[in-house]
Amino acid sequence: MTQRILLLTGASRGIGHATGKVFADNGWRVLTLSRQGFSPRCPWLGGPENHIQLDLANVEHLEPGLEEIRRRLPEGKLDALINNAGISPKGPENSRLGVLGSAYQTWLQVFNVNLFSTALLAKGLIDQLAAAKGSIVNVTSIAGTRVHPYAGAAYASSKAALLTLTREMAAEFAPLGVRTNAISPGEIDTAILSPGTAAFADREVPMRRLGKPVEVANAIYFLCSEAASYVNGTELHINGGQHV
Image 1 (cartoon, one colour):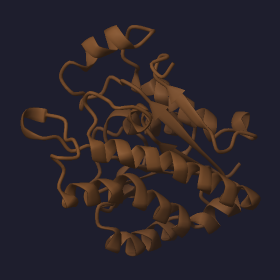
Image 2 (image 1 turned 180 degrees about the vertical axis):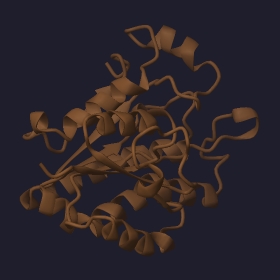
Image 3 (image 1 turned 90 degrees about the vertical axis):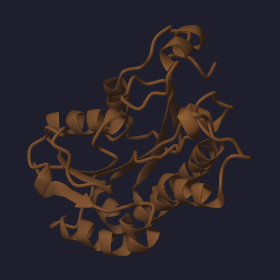
Image 4 (image 1 turned 45 degrees about the horizontal axis):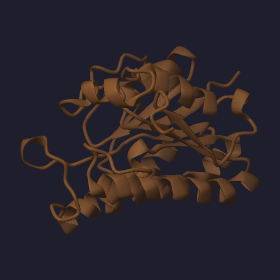
């Protein structure tokens, strides 16, 4: 069988890192994309050779990046695109940035990374995704549906918009054979947690714990598998019941 190929943004830590490992362990070739060079923390085979350095905050640089991605798909097929990269700027002493504390440049940077690049990557790779009857997974957030004590206004707004974009892509791309879904993580145990998140989860999450990155990664893998062949346009909540 031809090896399936994944393009994963934001792979060096947290959910992205766990996702790359799950797909690699299942025999996929994992192409990674980030603004930094390849991270030695990523343990999968062929990682450095399959890494593309691209800053998604600079959408002007996206077209050359897309050309490089397409060059690395020798059969012209991409089986999965996972838009995991995201930024959530903080204020002094790691404080939450509300509307009054967020400058235009903050909004622009957040939306470039969290929303606009997602649409442009999908648009630029739709032929390759269609050729493989592939799948797109967008990583939204519980902050997209409610005011969150740690996620800022720009981040939350971008994630709410990303869910709407997911529905638009699902409707537009499905006739091409490409499924688009979203996952909405809650409080996941990663290195970038804000102080107090563990205690918050113990109070607010019905399961009374933080989620594990691999629990999110397994859900992403499901959405890209044949087991989810009739799942399209949905947002899968992965938050221990926090959204109820």
